[in-house]
Image (cartoon, rainbow, N blue to C red; front, side, top):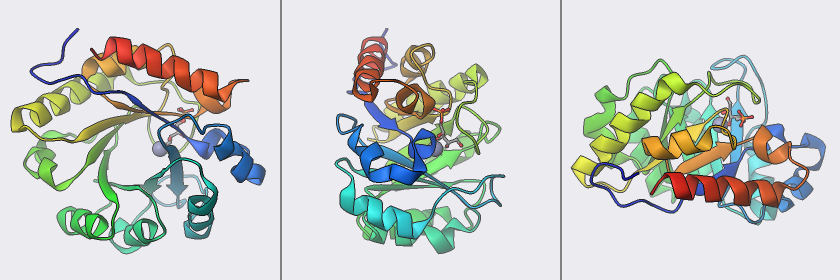
Length: 228
Ligand code: DX5
Ligand code: ZN
């Protein structure tokens, strides 16, 4: 199936270390060296009801990870906190639309610091108000679960938003990645790819597998076939 007017892009798989063993993160990133990046879920117990890790851990991960760091900040006041993640060496830094005060200024600051800028949207957050600003970001993360926890079920109700976003990016002729995050597995990744996503976060589907590299390869193959 082809996407409206756009070339299919190679799918990228970003395993989420939220489902990894937090006592052995260096080994856990080593298990996914065949992935395109590691997705690092930063939660502050305010924007979401869960607390994970912060800047010191990200700084250290940037030193030991065999793949780039894709930081997803589920935090209040990202205008204040996000730039330090770019400075720590994250290759992309994604902040939430619901939490940012000055998203354009923040995205520009992240890019200036050398990171790709990502904008995340919760399931109930509409994408249309952001259409004119798509040129300011490198990636839009469409949450396919309510943020806060790994292992939740994929929300198919979000797929029309993925499709409209991909359509807007194509018609504007922009190069913006569309990431889906939450409940992505062999059972759901094809639907997300078919709707126009090209970056896939998978926590439990990769870290819960015996062979993480095989899980990455299988997800990539399914997304590649479905996104064409
Ligand atoms: C949820 C996080 C996700 C989570 C995905 O708030 O943003 O990145 O780790 O985990 P799975 O793939 O298990 O749904
Ligand atoms: Zn995430």
